Image (tube, rainbow, N blue to C red; front, side, top):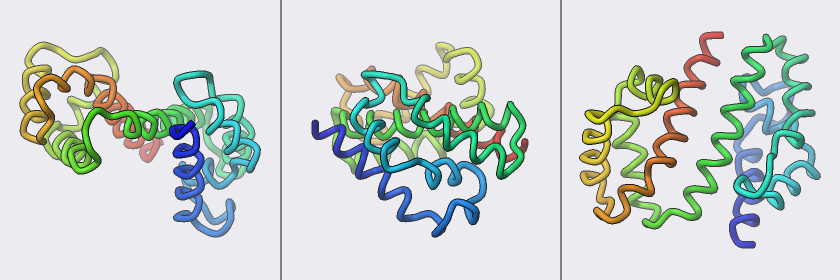
Length: 171
């Protein structure tokens, strides 16, 4: 229940940081601004782990695709970015470490892993050398040794978001 409420609060907070209306939003922000109140409630109710939020994102994606003339590829990238951001938010709520450690992890990954490596992880997984490098980054960010394994999915979401945001911006 706490996680669902947090997701709704997160969606509302994102909306509060965006332009006042959907037509003023560029890029991915358009999707958040075009989510109906019902969609926001349902996304929070469903939760990322318990069901697919795509049907609730679809009207906003369609609206933004038409308004901003996105290609099919751009629309698919936008969908991936939004769903991955929601998943990352859920992972942050359930993380086995405090928020300060999460911020250090975010910073360590975004500063310490070249974008080409993030893209490679998104495309085909992570090799042994990258696993060692990532474990060292996580240790440096203060992640306890017994929690490093949990961060595979978390870092994976960061890799997907960063990779697809770059591709979306270039589309």
